[in-house]
Amino acid sequence: MRYGERTAVDGLSFEVESHTITAVLGPNGAGKTTTLETCEGYRRAQAGTVRVLGLDPVRQRHELIPRIGVMLQSGGGWSGARADEMLRHFAKLHANPLPTDLLMERLALHECGRTPYRRLSGGQQQRLGLALALVGRPELVFVDEPTAGLDPQIRRGVWELLEELRADGVTVVLTTHYLEEAERLADKVHILDQGRLVASGSPLELTRGGTVATIRLVVTQPFPEGAPQALARALGDSTELTVLDALSLQVSGPADGTTLATVAAWCADHDVLPESLSLGQRNLEDVFLELTGREDFA
Ligand SMILES: Nc1ncnc2c1ncn2[C@@H]1O[C@H](COP(=O)(O)OP(=O)(O)OP(=O)(O)O)[C@@H](O)[C@H]1O
Image (cartoon, rainbow, N blue to C red; front, top):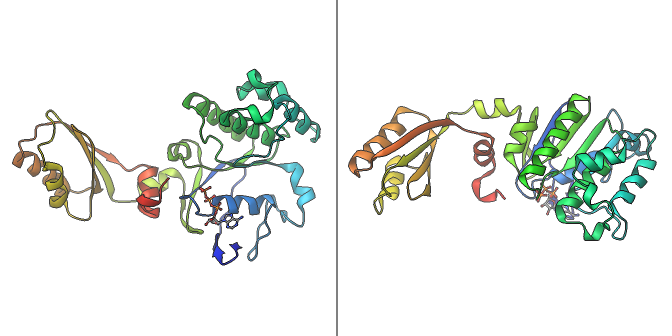
């Protein structure tokens, strides 16, 4: 997919299994929305082949539309229409819609049902967008950043809803910048960078593979001046040191004895008394940053 001279999606190839949740991840501008919009039939792929439920999303759009749900990244509402009106209207466009009251309740929208779209908060617009995508009982739902800007409690409610949909046999394709969301929900993750696929696998497959681990050190007294910098020099370029606060730091790098020995020797040299030293496996965020570069992550 190109926009003028800019290539937004380049040779990307992946399949989504039915009844699973797939997360498409990537830094800003990686091509996630373009990919989803191409699958949804909003954009025509300039090269390659796209099939969704076996259908061409542009040429067979009329057959595909009743079978999929789409939640756009933002917008899509009529500014003067009330939330409950919009949902009821969308429900009437479908043969066998979900009960709208139930959806309003599940997405904590019942309190703002009579509020016009333009007066809904960002989080309420977000949840209404999800309700509109789900009301037609889609077989496959595309959700672009479903929990962006939602508070933690409501985010968990949305996670539970997406898990229930999967249990009911719905296929979910989502994009997110919350890596713990992908780690918790997704059966399969595809990581894009600059329009290309850089990794695919289950969260477990992606986090298990590498040799990178994280050492967290908590100390009893604030670090002596210059001590963290001295540790960073001693560890060298293959590790990354982050000072978390006055009493704790984190080292990401090769999970080997040399790294641990360097940290221990540094403690002895600088009279640093550890309160705890823990070694953890990397999580999806570590993998994502390794693959796409820390400075790009937003
Ligand atoms: N309508 C457009 N016209 C021109 N360029 C566009 C258009 N839409 C997207 N792009 C460009 O294509 C690239 C991919 O954008 P896309 O929105 O697909 O990325 P994304 O991964 O969804 O980003 P984000 O995480 O910020 O939502 C970016 O460089 C973007 O600037």
